[in-house]
Amino acid sequence: MNEFTQKRSHIHAVIVICALATYHVAGDMNELTQERSHIHASIVRRPLVSHQTARNMNELTQVRSHTHASIVKRASVSHQAAGNMNELTQERSRIHASIVKSLLIGYQAAGDMNEFTQ
Image 1 (cartoon, one colour):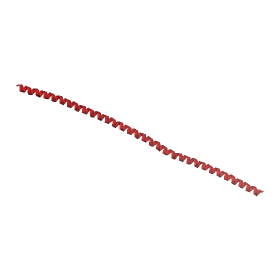
Image 2 (tube, rainbow, N blue to C red; image 1 turned 45 degrees about the vertical axis):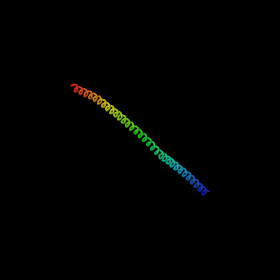
Image 3 (cartoon, helix red, strand yellow; image 1 turned 90 degrees about the vertical axis):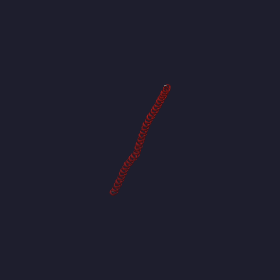
Image 4 (cartoon, one colour; image 1 turned 120 degrees about the vertical axis):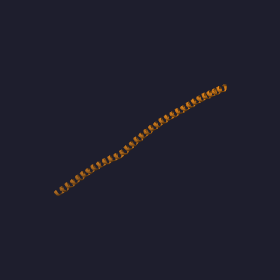
């Protein structure tokens, strides 16, 4: 009976040891699963951060392009205004020259008439 009790105790101990080992393995597997989930979340998070950074850079590029276009438009408007002023100045100079010519022709005609009269 003693031998039988010892074998039963040994079998019971082996069962308990196996159960504890299984529990320990299950705990390790749970930790590994959590670690894998953490790694997966980190892998997913990195592209999302990169995507957000790329979107932010794209927005900044668009703002810079819009600002550049605005500067170019302003410069173009200023250039056009300067061109218009230049044309107006040239037109005024032509009118002034035409007036002076008319006066000179009138003066010349009067001089000729004066000579002819003398």
